[in-house]
Amino acid sequence: MSDKRSIFEEVSDAGPTERKAPVGGMIDQGKRGARRGIRVWLAVLFALVVVMIAVGGLTRLTDSGLSITEWKPVTGAIPPMSQTDWESEFAKYQEIPEFQLQNKGMSLEEFKTIYWWEWGHRQLGRFIGLVWALGFAGFALARAIPTGWTGRLVTIGALGGLQGAVGWWMVSSGLTGTMLDVASYRLATHLGLAFVILGTIAWYIFQLGREERDLMQARRLREAKLWGISTGWLHLAFVQILLGALVAGIDAGQSFTDWPTMGGQFIPPEAFDLTPVWRNFFENAGLVQFIHRMVAYLLLAMTIMALIKGRKSANASTRAAFIAASIAVFGQVCLGIYVLFSGVQAHVALTHQIIAVLVWVLILRARFLSGYPITDAIRRG
Image (cartoon, rainbow, N blue to C red; front, side, top):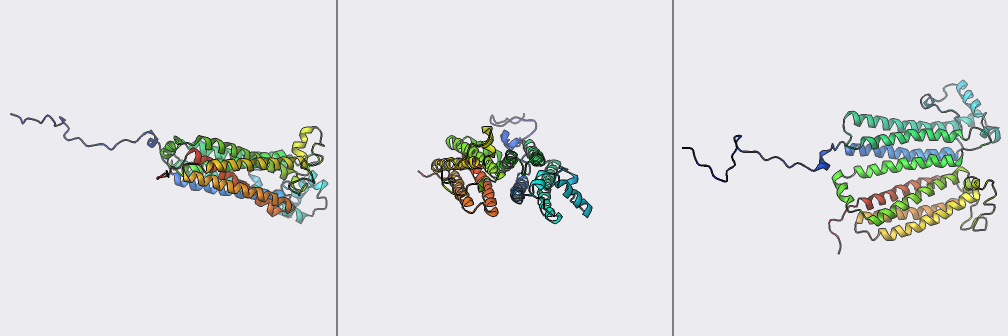
């Protein structure tokens, strides 16, 4: 007679069953990839774009942007190698309005100086493209790109390629007619796209710094009011950056260097002298600078509001982010006033442009932390 089995004994022909490890949720099913490595790569790209913005500013301040009159994305990487090559490049420059109307007495040696600035600017752009391409190819071949991130990383490369095309579109505006510089609205487009690229890279760096499941959980705790305020704050800062490019494009900062008035008046004289009227908003130095000042005041007011609201956040990291961004804006406003008092000295104006990068990224970070807050382990009562 066979032994009786306990009613609590599991009947199985396969013997005792082994316990399986619990299966994670859908968030954990995707490939995690080399998140840290990609984040480092993006940080390098971010730093290079910041350097690119600085070099671009110096290229403009040294009036070097029109020294290369052709767009050769590949062969243009090789500079003139002989006296004949240099004379050929100089001859091309002598055909454009900037030389004929402004630099008629320029020597070949002087031309070489501005040529190297523009060549370096373009070469840096090529190097950034190479860093992106090699990094993307490396992570793709290693199958180390996290699930859902391929399209995002391709977007960065596409934006970089578009930036190169916009750069040439900008330069080409100063090669014909009576233009002594590039069109200011094209300069604003070029700089604006650079900040879009910076913002995109920074946002991805923020996201890669935390696990997907952490972001999903944090999103449920989004501080809706702070998210809305920081979104508006970010957009207004972007508009101000574009206006700053318009000011730089026509050297509007040098037209009125007094503050808080402009030529002793609130609204500058001859603010609407150009016809048709719309031209004044792009080409009238007094009106363009006036608008830039007014938006600065509006941005300052919005910063104060964001600071007041941000300091009420229940999360310490979010509070700190809003405070840091506000301090940067306050400093940028003060620096902007000093730019005027300095007579728009090149190094001061360039510093003002670089601080704009800091303002942009810090506001973006405040927005990120209001949308994906890091909750405090112990909340104060």
